[in-house]
Image 1 (cartoon, rainbow, N blue to C red):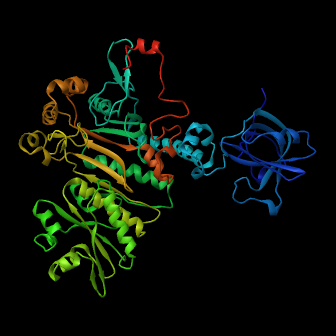
Image 2: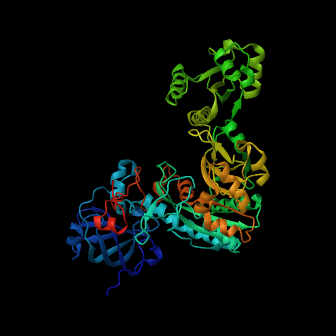
Image 3: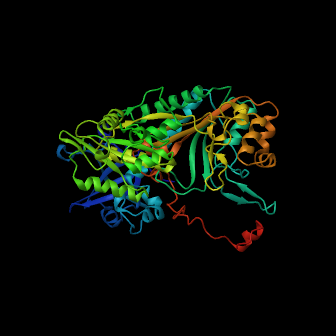
Length: 588
């Protein structure tokens, strides 16, 4: 068996001059200069420029080799002339004069160039030929980043005293918020396994088993629609759980881990320092119009309902009188924007199924806009005080009722941040959103349903469930948000059977449902369960942020497309009638 390489393509330096080497890799590019043929040879480690003289026996073989063919070369390392040194390449001071070439794997004509930019390629091209797409520099670097982060996280968790576990992939279906992926049983007719939406029950059972501190880089499976920051199908979590722990202690683990990660992998960026700001859920919805606030944007939303209550502006005054609200978002230094800019913002409101986006413009000459004429001087001064409106600023209003209106105010805030270039540059800003509501109203049934995680401990425990309006109960539940993305979700867990029965009863599930769906964990809690809690980071999202990618699929080796299809392996796909019969399934 021949030696395929004595060095990697990215290892050679000036100190290797005059050494004989063997390299193997892919032909990235070829440049024919008449008497000399230059080849950039690439492997996982880097690129080395190889040069072949026209008189060399291997010249014709290399001349006809297509890009991306795999070759083995033997040759001598030489220093490049001063004018030909490439300072952008780690190997830019040397090249390899080749005297022998072996073809190891010949490539067909490529569907696209490996040197192409992502913007030049369609999603279908990239995912159908993902093995080629991953040879391109940026996707390749993204996957190598995952590897480095993987090791860093494991080392950090071990150093904090956590023990790594692997939990089952085939489990039972349970109501955890998303649709399950179901796996039919061949042995048990008409019964199904489910792929875990998270290791939630298993990690809690490990706490009951006395292991104290668990962690896992856990695969999770959810049949959800695709988003820029969410992969349909499967994703990975940095999952952990702790016994005899307070919420503050869990938050500290999250802060310690994320700050260590960004210090290591984004050392030239500005990053929030621990302890991070803690924002109650209801305050986040009011101030930022979302439970995922991007703190790089300095703008905030202000409730100005009192300004319009009883005013001459009937539309707003009537809404406030009927239990609605008016929210204001300041647009600094926008008074000189053309009328078309204001019209575009009104069109944005209509696109979001809102009636419009009223505004007031404050200038040195006076206040402009139809709403300004409907407010007396006292109301205007109150408005300016509440919003911090200065001369040459504008203020925009969102009026209505319910969550839809509050969320639209958040969209306007983010739009202004981008339109007016207000976002902090080269920064990662983290915060905690805490005190989530335990229940929310099901719009279809008008009854309470779990708003987040049914395994969370309600604040006030059993007494709160027995005495409070369900919609007023808060949970020991929290999210970490970074640059407008949910990075982590966690909670103090409900470890008491009596509280679990009551919590599910309020959500419309009787004891028989709880015992059927969560029987294993419920039974374990009856034999002495410690107070415990934990959280999970979205591993893919951390890589996405570190690599400054807009789409999460850019940091996953073999992602689904937006329709949850694997174009490379042709999944999902039909199966044979024999397979269907073995699993007792008949297609309708």
